[in-house]
Image (cartoon, rainbow, N blue to C red):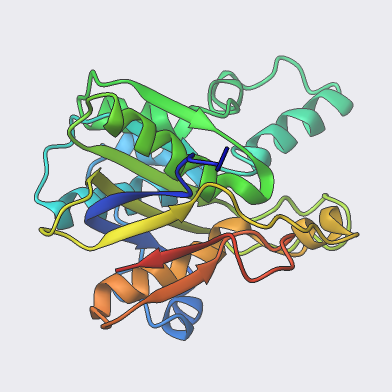
Length: 254
């Protein structure tokens, strides 16, 4: 019998935002309005947050503003390394027997830190997901958001982010901090739609881990924000996973 399974799914993009603290990097990608925006966080809270949390919340704030949407919606926060820098500081304290450990660092070291700060700042009681899938973070986040929309959510906030890699990590890890956020809903004629394949040709490279070390997975999705900002006509395709050698397994904007 022929395979009748769907080959892709589509979601509508009601709003978008990005945060790239490096101004030169943002300009190179032709992305506007990408600096830190911590207006949602009280001053005392800002001082306690990590780089990862700050860029995630900045991008999320812009996406909700662009969508003209309430902040109280389900959220999917996806990061390859999460609060790696904070965890690194804790590990250094342990190796140096610097006890007691900082309660603030411990509090901020978990993978759902950004989602937690967002839900508090946004006064949102909606469910929040914190997820990770190395190179597949963006794809996983889109799949989770689409699943929630199919199951009844009117809108879902997707935030993909990664901070700078800690200085004591192995050689080769040299990521620039960046975040992208999308307010997603069911695909319709009202907003640009994003098509994501479900059955891609996943021919992996032989040295996938090395390529992951040299490449921030979130950076592959940033051209999507540039496309949305400039409203470029026609199809637009970006690769999602640097470990995929084939041309398939890509996003398509219509």
